Structures are given as structure tokens and as C-alpha cells.
Image 1 (spheres, rainbow, N blue to C red):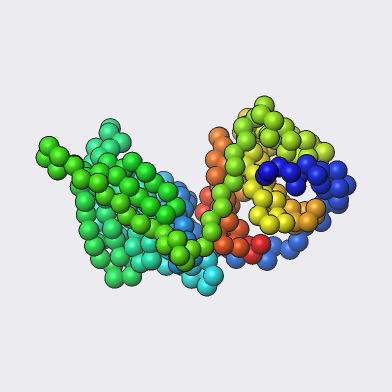
Image 2 (cartoon, one colour):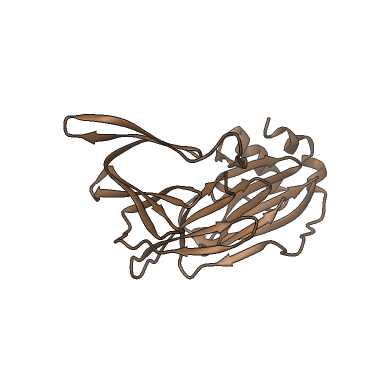
Length: 265
């Protein structure tokens, strides 16, 4: 179903001139690269993990997608590259700290209140089994036994819908369908394509060859017209097509590794 709109309007869209709107979205540039982003669907905010490649410094930020308020969070305990942001819920950042760098599990699960600057709980010997936008599940090992643990991140009664693109790998029929449109714009996509339809919007993330590496592009269409085309990154070594999301009616993506951008759909 996701490709029906593109197929029906393929010829009409390709005959449109490339008219881009002015860049009117919200933009925030961090001093260090963004490692990953987690969405809080209840509070409509983002938990952002950042890592300094030179010094291995590791810290976080919280961004409200409606007010655009950004808060830098530096947890007052040692954090390194073997710690990962698992989720965000209100004032809580939920972080997994690997106990052994050579063993991906178990981990120490930590809940940190970024408003109060306080570690609320540390749970050692936690084995993660499921991680989604709304729940973290796993089991805690205690001597010869274990107990199941479930942390709810979202509230189904009051939740902002989060939409992520579908990934199409090269040489598959969906990839070729989208690639046909891009080729008519003199673009030859490589490796994989990420595709998402939201109401009357179509979002296509694709890669173009640039010497021995690739440039990452995001194309935004609305009602058969090109709204915007972004270059998200230059000269990347590999693909990471999960580089954008839609939270509520907000398009969110990272540009040039350090810049987070938000647009109203």
C-alpha cells in the first residue's frame, strides 16, 4: 500500500519543475556528533545521545519538539562509549551500561532524572530482550534465578504517533519503483532507499555515488510537488537509512552529523 501513491502519480510528479521552498524549519547544531535519538511519544520530546570522538566524552541532550527548548544533560557518573541511551520517559533517561566490553550482555540498567540531576535506580545484571518505542523488556539475573522486568515508556491513552521509514534494499521491486522516479530526475540511487508516506507527504531517503563514497539525500514531496530536497551528509562510508522520523506532525532528521532539524508537515 505504501507505494500506491507514488505509482499513481509517478508521471505527474516527474513532470514538475524542481521548486524548493525556503528553509523555514527549526535547526539546532551541537558541538559534537549525534550518536542516536530516542523519542518520548507522551511528552513529545527527544533524547539525544552525543559522543566526542577526540576525547571519548559521552553526554546527552533533551529537546522538546514543540517549544524547541534544548537541555544539555551531563550525568554525574562515569560514562563511556559502552553506555547507550535506551529510552526517554518524561524526566527520565533510561541508559544501558555494558559491564564487559567484550560481552554485549548483561548490562546495568540505569534510570536518571535529568531535571533533578539524580540517579533514581541502577539495576545490574539486566539482559535486554525487547526494545520498542513504548517498552523496555528483559530479565534481571539474581544468583541462580532471574525475574522479568518491564519498563513502560509510552502511554497508549495519550501518545504522539511515531512513524519510521520502510527500508528497500537494491534490486528489490520496491527499490526499483522508487528508483524509476529518481532516475527521471537524473539521480541514480545506490545501496538502499528509505520510504515513508504521511497523509499527502512522501519522504524518500537515498544515496548517490560521490567518488568512492556516497552522499545522503532526503527528498520531501507533497501533493505531487517537491517541497524540499536536503543533503544530509557528504562522503559517507555506509548506509544508515533510519536517519529520519515523523513524531506527531513533525519531520525530524540529522544533517551533517551535528545538526538536528525539525519541520512541520
